[in-house]
Length: 509
Image 1 (cartoon, rainbow, N blue to C red):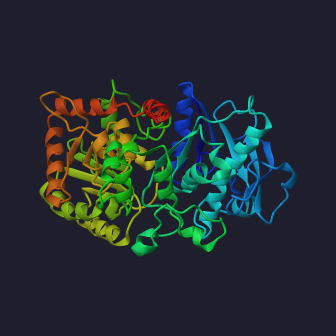
Image 2: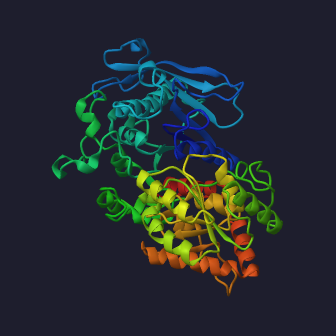
Image 3: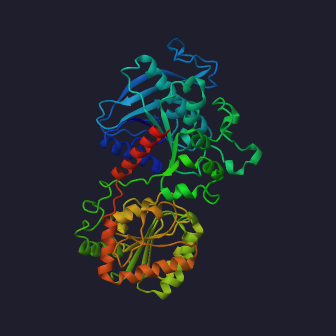
């Protein structure tokens, strides 16, 4: 299959959030399984190119219509390419001599090259609608140049709200609908809370976009109020989010971000596929950040040494008998810190054998509470309330368990990273965490962690006590650690699921 991914950020060229990492690893994994994969993304002013990489011009003077295209010629007209009154003029570049996945970059001086950041501008809706329309204009050019010899996608995979416009344009704009009649469009929701460059939650119901009206001109002030994410959901042939459990959760008002009614209406085309983990970058056998390397066959002594190193880094007593819990990530309500802070004082007081190390920035009032607790329990609590990109590896490799008490968690990447290094997750059952972690069963000796369901301090307290009790039974504890280390969370595994999804969308509609 020929697959074109379209996204606002792609590592290593532009890196802001998790989407850029997905766009780096997923296409490469798909290519390993024989897919003909390409990527289309903006060419930002601060774009980072790998050393030695050079760009070649693919398409010059690409004319992207600003307004509704009903009155425009159906085919690309090269004579009028310099018409700037009705069109925005772009170029498309590609990486030259790239042996990996081919990447195309959309160049426009006003909307990309002169911007210091990827996101955060009041005209972001225009910038990413331009990306969406430009993909279709670029395909028109390719189709009219030499339709027999030109690469043309079977599937266009659109990512997040930035490309929801693309799905709508392709399906309902007469200029593009004939071009796209044989292409299947799939749409991945990485974060349902972001639906466009507008906060739709506070609109009155009568002003909410229902995706029925055609998209209007890019520069029309009303264009901003047309919900790009909703339109991707409504008009795509297949929709998915980043875990099977989260795909079910977003059908409810609690997790649906105001779109649960629409998601339920189109639930037959909705699914969930877990993101993967880069096994090369996250590898305890080769990671230079950890004191001693190890794998699933040689972890016992190595992890004990890494634990001692971690205790020393945080200024805690070096005690192999201590049950050392780690926490990595934002200190916010979404990560469950309201209930964690209800639990910690009693837990540390009643369980002196428990130690906790925490890395991450967050809400001031939560961080202040942790600082006060540190003064009271300085031999049990270690803090680094800053962003750190290397210390988490030490925590994964040296902590006995990883605490993830999230109120919601679409993907659950921290749990994957922790298990890769043998830190046993203690999680609340929600979203991707529910799909990743299986409770340890002492009878079957299967399972990779411990969990609780109710969003209450007592439920969390019980899960920690349960895990700490199993920690005292070394044979059992080593088994659950081994199970976690052997868990298959590679991108190759995710790629297989995406290929099956593509085939389902292609052949079942």
